[in-house]
Image (tube, rainbow, N blue to C red; front, side):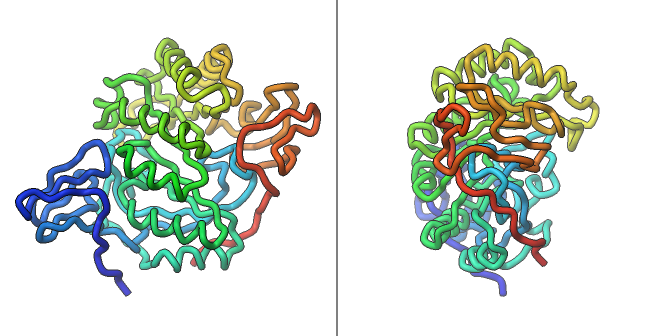
Length: 350
């Protein structure tokens, strides 16, 4: 059964017809019968509606490490879901077949928020994660599921580009447990030319999440020739140090040719290792190398005594020695994050 359109949050109406969406920094002006840049929010007779509410195009199960969120109950399996489209146009998106299409171009399921929570419970999962495309573009669905998850004792996380205005972000943070934001590069030129967006709103979102004390991790996908300049990486790490603190985990992940950037080569591992060293020299305590299975920087080390506390191979946790209260068993130092017992239950959804 197809759900009825859901009236959107965060918009205003002009002359009873045109609408301005106030969800993301684009603040689209949307005429009657038209949709905004994200393809999901439509003006119907002077009211803004979400076209994707209750219509996820993917619902599956995966490890939290794939987010990646390394300090958020490591080793547990999450219910992953997403809806069509995005409010960015990243030229290297590896989920472009979902993010660069509208609902009309994709197959989708019909799941109410209660259905999603029940799926998570049925499979004995510990959290619900909104990922694969940008959660902002199905904000109302995300919000309602998160409210219900909180009531049912499930944790929630988003994998986001951070391109959202402050008011809707703050409202969302009240019902989220963890946020991973892609800091795609550290220049306006990169954001404009590669992502069709701008950098400053993302930086503002990062600061907002941190000030709200919601658990935050950052990913920087290092793309050869576009955002891999050591000076840019150093500037980014200094900004993180000064604005988000030394304990915010930073993941440098390996780019592989995709979508509109198939002419580029994969990121050399040496480039990722150079970025890792730059971050460590800036004092960042939890720096990771991603998309390089078996790399020593997949694992988590105590910033106080240096002992390996979580051993990972790619998305698999081999050993987790951090106590449930977040203490290092070797030196007693406090590890920043949200900790708990590993949970590896669940089976593929039909």
